[in-house]
Length: 298
Image (cartoon, rainbow, N blue to C red):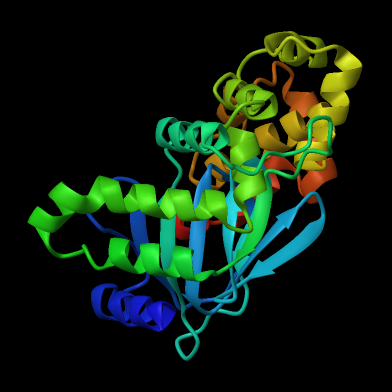
């Protein structure tokens, strides 16, 4: 019932394709009615809840399709290919996109870990991936409905918005995506901290030893935990983030050389070789033929 109410609210408030701000920081409603083939993107820590249609995210070669039966939680920055291959005017993609505030998520995760009776992950167990598709449970659906209902009322949004967003965060931490979110924002979030560091220093030389030292791990332990969390080796991940970011910037009009330098490639020829190996086109071909992804897909 809550999901259907959310869908009606979005239909009423989002008349055209694109993202619409709700007044609560980091919370947007969206509509897409045209099919968009999957293209390189970088997912930031986000929850996406769909109430109509479906989205696709390709992570390390594996396709993940999510719709109104499961919401997506990306707890760490991830290089993906994203699209809406099935969207149409008759079957539009409708949903809510929620940025995860690291400070609030960390506060909640640690409070939960410290609370009496809190469920703790086994020490030394495998790390979950930083990307999860989670079942809509009653707690998540009800919290999301209360958040979306604020849209359009400036006073309610100003007074209640932060609290209701916190309820949604808490529902995510308790739900099927909880292990992923707690690992990224709670105690033991070393891999998430490394990824945040990498994402903000793409124009610098980054080695596995540097990343391991950043969180005080040996190279071997860091490599194993990083791959468990992302499905990729550290080098694969850094290359994916760099090339996806460059592809997005070139599609938006940045020159090939500028894009290469902005993501840390000192050698244009190396950038061209690695880009063509990943996408099957040279950077110049890509920049001539690709259009920027709609904001709702990034």
